[in-house]
Amino acid sequence: MNPPAANPNSSEDSWAREVENRDRFQFGANWASFLHRLTPERIERAEQSLKYFLGATSLEGKRFVDIGSGSGLFSLAARRLGAIVTSFDFDAQSVACTAELKRRYFDGNPQWTVRRGSILDPEILASLGEFDIVYSWGVLHHTGAMWEALENAGKMVAPGGLLFIAIYDDRGRKSRFWKRFKHLYVKTPKPLKWGLFIPAFMKIWGPTLLKDTLKGRPLASWKAYAGRGMDAWHDLLDWLGGYPFEVARPDSIISFYRERGFALKNVKISAGGCNEFVFGRAR
Image 1 (tube, helix red, strand yellow):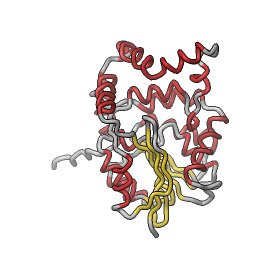
Image 2 (cartoon, one colour; image 1 turned 90 degrees about the horizontal axis):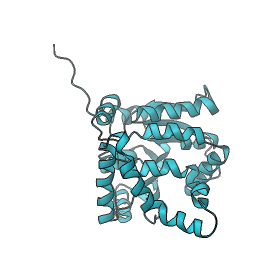
Image 3 (tube, rainbow, N blue to C red; image 1 turned 135 degrees about the vertical axis):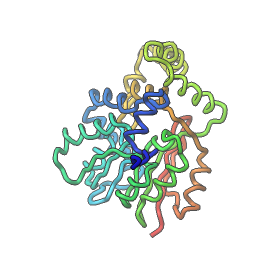
Image 4 (spheres, helix red, strand yellow; image 1 turned 30 degrees about the vertical axis):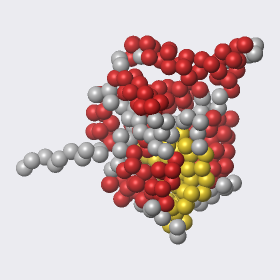
């Protein structure tokens, strides 16, 4: 008897193969480092981000799924706000990070489940079901099949529920440049990455740091960076290495979900990063 065929969407098989072939950035390794810098202030900022975009002061009793939980910060924020949380990620190290945050703050709590899985895996979707809040910030464009991932995320929203996603804006030629750069960065052996990192760092942060220095406050913006509870160093690494990488114009995302019965509830258009959307599904 022949052995069963491998599941091409299997988290374990696909992730290991892509990392070995240098076709995927190891997001989890970056988030493991970030956890050493996690502070109560950063957790509070993450909570405020959720409350602001979802238009809620509490998530008490809401079923919340964090697709691509990464560091686990926003799963933690949702649980602290009262949600019943399910976290899953394709990256083994990201799963470990999320599990570590659960251990630190909600050890043994049955209202927070952490597991391994891919949003592209039909078995995962079938096993998890629907949620009141489906959250996936800056994740679906890193799957290698963004539109399929967007489709699947929408299917996880219960009638009357909310979908909160963030997707890289399509900047045309600039986006194409960064896609090539990211692929090269991931392919480059670690000792040689500095040759790419330094010029990219100067392009992204150089003008801001120069202005701060001229004002007599060097590194002020770098030290003060705390968007959504993150920090400048780890967000920069996430940006430079974030491959696979896809983009979409805001109107394309909005049209995509309107055709599937969703209404736009909130939106924030980025000046060059991720556009943020909250959609509501009809009851």
